[in-house]
Image (cartoon, rainbow, N blue to C red; front, side):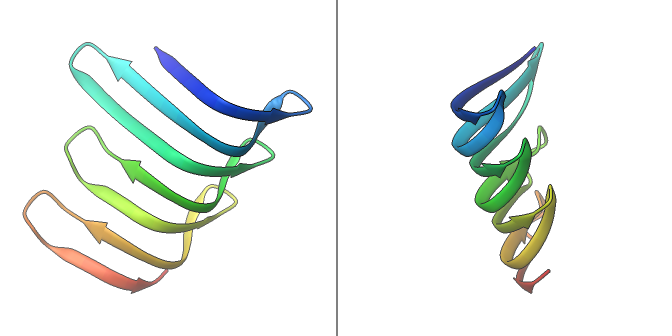
Length: 80
């Protein structure tokens, strides 16, 4: 099940919002900015295994400055 709470424009996610997908005990989420239904701007994406990316997005992809952290403690901070 997916749930979105936030702003819409012309029927699509646009502006700040939070999306969560939950299936049984597995949950991943994105909280941040959208443009025309795509992650675009600053946001935080968290995977079901605990890894996360916090930083810039453009057209649904990581872009610009950001921080990626994996569950083993490895971290990358820099340009995407």
